[in-house]
Image 1 (tube, rainbow, N blue to C red):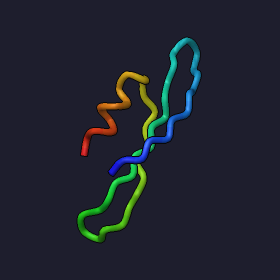
Image 2: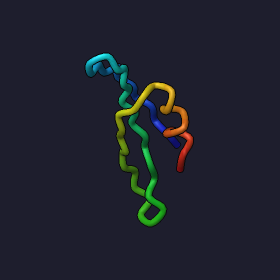
Image 3: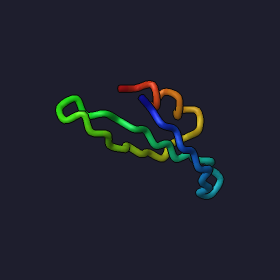
Length: 50
């Protein structure tokens, strides 16, 4: 299960995107959030990864 919250970030001439993914812990069943700042074309690969 993934939750995508995207904010457009500007740093110089590069366009960056912040992606936030909700990850369920197999041990406790609790959810945690993993966030990363990356190029917009890499967001779908980040969200598909387990």
